[in-house]
Image (cartoon, rainbow over all chains, first blue to last red):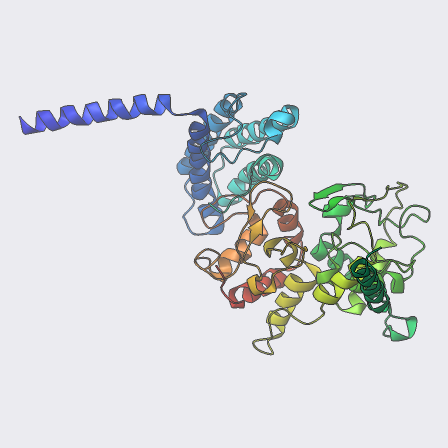
Length: 149
Length: 291
């Protein structure tokens, strides 16, 4: 009985969490999405840095996270979401949408290339993840507000 | 005219007379230059460490607009073009401009040009830098004048500013005779001019050296430039190896990426020898921790 109740409340909690997520302001949704991209970078970067053992499957999982980020980012910067919720989005995203879209498409292409390459060694990982990392910086250079947090 | 106003005018006149010689743009003469054979290979390393093209543009043609509370500065053409660049300059002209903020015509430069850092450079490095710039392609591009509001438009006043803020002395006193530490100090305090953004400024635009490298508002507008001293608000949690890796790869220990104007800086530093990145890390871990 106790177990059933706790299972039930767990389900209810999960349901509430997912409803709350869907209702999250777009500024927070994109912030969460970027954090996911960073965590994926932590896996791949950790391998390249020599802190983690090379793991082809884990690397591919990270690539898939980036592919998801690439697919969803474009819709998460609508008009009206320029400020609020401590967003680090720079106004240039809205004043220079063409440039922003160009950077996003470079990211998408680099991620697609990495998935296609399906690296099986640390050298191959370096060759396929390097261009992705370059596009992360490429967009953060002109379209993100730098803050210490 | 009332007596008080006459006195005030007289006092202002006297002040101006007294200050005039003090605000004179300073130069060094050719006899002060060391006997040094220009080395464009070293000059290129100096150019990379200084990140000259971050502001002056990849082809060095200038034109970038830097907005500030004092007005808009237009970045000059430093390509070796004779008509619109610095092709006609001698190495001495470049030494005077970078170390004393004085143009070949004997005028003060605005400190948007970070000579407050370059003043700590080695003269030999500037001679080499000139030799390297002379190997680059001339770019014909006439850059217009700065758009600066009164009273900042009176350049002579910069002479006073220099008396307060132009100082060749090291910011951080050498902790040891370690040449790697000294190299790090040189890269951060002089050529790399890191303090220009990473140190907060007072209302006159002078760096608050008591808050050296402790970060401040982004001079380009929104956001903040981070504290890079070994303080809990800064890089205390970063090891020297973390700093080296960041400068090499653009990744923080959390695998966030470098962003904003630091991207070009990081990509330049990544081109330097690994020993230079280690030297920078050594120096940064040694500076006083500030909140």
